[in-house]
Structures are given as structure tokens and as C-alpha cells.
Image (cartoon, rainbow, N blue to C red; front, side):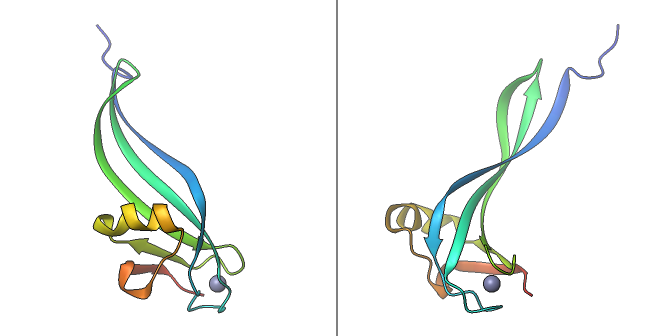
Length: 93
Ligand SMILES: [Zn+2]
């Protein structure tokens, strides 16, 4: 019996919306909000979300920032990100 391909971990990313945040790299304020997920799959069906994170990326210079998960509800509602909502800088140009 072959078990390869029955279990698997799949990564996905999804663009949620545009948000306002002043980029520390290029001072542009056009950012895009993405949700990243790692999902454990069994027979190609997602059974468990292993990890979920939200990242904003600057449309001009591609700097990206990881956001605090407990702030996400407010951010999704208002479409605004403040400096204290950023957990860490992923990449700054
Ligand atoms: Zn930028």
C-alpha cells in the first residue's frame, strides 16, 4: 500500500484587502493584506489549520510586516494598520 500523497501539509496565501499603513521603507501608504495558512490535509481534504498568519506588503517597495493576530478583527474592519499592530518586520527595503 502506498501512503505518499494521503497526508500532506499545504500552504496557501490569500489577498484579503488593501489597507492603510505608512511604509517605513518608502513612505507609501498603499499596503495589501494577505492571510497565510498552513493546512494539514488528509485525502486532499483540509482537516486542521496548523498555522495562520497575516502579513501586509507594500505595493511599491515590497516591504512586508507580520501583524499581531489579536488586532486582526479591528484591522479587517477599519482597513487601517497602526505601528503597534505590527508584530515584526519581515522584510524592509
Ligand atoms: Zn514601501
